[in-house]
Length: 261
Ligand SMILES: Nc1ncnc2c1ncn2[C@@H]1O[C@H](COP(=O)(O)OP(=O)(O)OP(=O)(O)O)[C@@H](O)[C@H]1O
Ligand SMILES: [Mg+2]
Image (cartoon, rainbow, N blue to C red):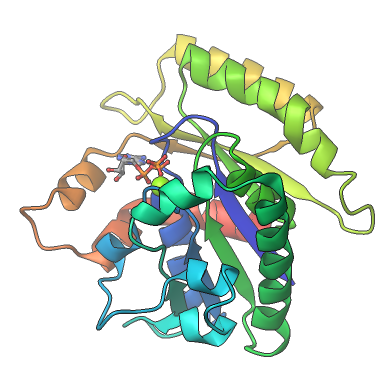
């Protein structure tokens, strides 16, 4: 059973983009994939997969108001299913929820993941996590057996992520001693020059930090450049073309997908 969460310490690193195109990649490989928008305060799956009707949000399952299968929706892509986050107002509720409530959500989450694999036949479940260290995001980290930690090369982003590894990720390894966790570092939005090469200073910086993360048990997943065409494709005045964006990201997503297979 493969459950993957895409997390980061700082916001806007590219978690959702990577979660969506990794899901797309596995579905094209004929795997049955469920992508859950777990960024309850700031959902974004509607952008990639506009919903029809008024789908029940994933949180209504956590709250015990819906069955798991009622919060799973088909998309136009074969083998790819999604579960939407609720209206952002729920963000307020989950942010103010106490530890006991989060404990209850975690239990439901673990039951739901098992059901997704055992009864609904999903090969991969991917959770698009929120950034930071809220109880909700740590719950999501702890119930997945693989994770991607997405970082942009900037001083505070990298150093604080490294601290997070020691504060949280290492402890998660002891959470379920029978399972083998795999956590990968993804460099994203890395500036490249015209000839697709890195500035030597940035290259050195990435090399040095990749090694430090590796020493802390986090292997290198991929280095994704800042791709201007992805930015243009994501602007609201152009028609949204999922396969086109997938083709721009393909070589990097494939590298990640092969490591997570
Ligand atoms: N490699 C890249 N090249 C160009 N644009 C990118 C790249 N990665 C992400 N982006 C863009 O950066 C923006 C932020 O990405 P995204 O929403 O995936 O980040 P996030 O980590 O999910 O953010 P949040 O913390 O708010 O959930 C998006 O507009 C996305 O298209
Ligand atoms: Mg996001």
